Image (cartoon, rainbow, N blue to C red; front, side, top):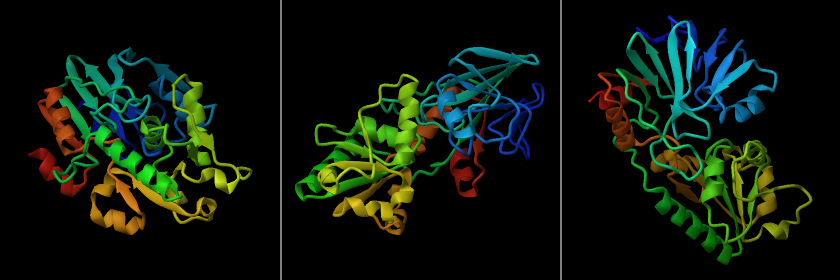
Length: 310
């Protein structure tokens, strides 16, 4: 097999290299900067130019890393590797592996729909496709980004009319920037949690034209937040940090918000179904577009295997 699943990660024996390894290895190809794909302790990293600023921010500036452009071929021990846009977060990639005419693609995380910020997903033809399946069940179907943000902006306006601060949470890397980029900034000021703003600064410094935000600091008077929106991390919900925004309405942006139980457990006012992963239809569209003869569903969650196999 060109790629094998081992106790350290997805392994290419011909090149002696791992893709997104979860234990320390000598050489690692990294699809993107989220913590479950980009880990500390590897002796050598290879990723896209667009992904490296965030990866260095998270793992340290002194990691031994080499970068490639999207589509550029890197040959290691006779195996051809190239990185192709995955549409998940800025710089995220699917990794194409070719050896003696056989082609495999490891998807990493991906979404098919464009979000106005991330490089658009690129279908890559191959013989074997290792696809992610975070939302690999027919119950997961996303509305269009346009429709979802119309609801978010409408909710913000209503809160503003009622004299409330709007607090919307999403992951600090990826989801928060997507929210910021697609909010209607004519409604008011977009404030940010420090964890979000730290990532914003990294992304802006690499040349991404991310819309304007203001970091929440202790010296900002409480009345300044009234009618405006705060983009925060999920960990902020229920924390003492939120007190400065009272009265407020709080919402969560996540693909898991499509499940009623998830909304209830978060104890928030609104849940918006917004994911940086492909939904059921997009997963099937992406798999078909590869024209792969064989597909491997990853992670191996039992409830997802049978539907995806069909």
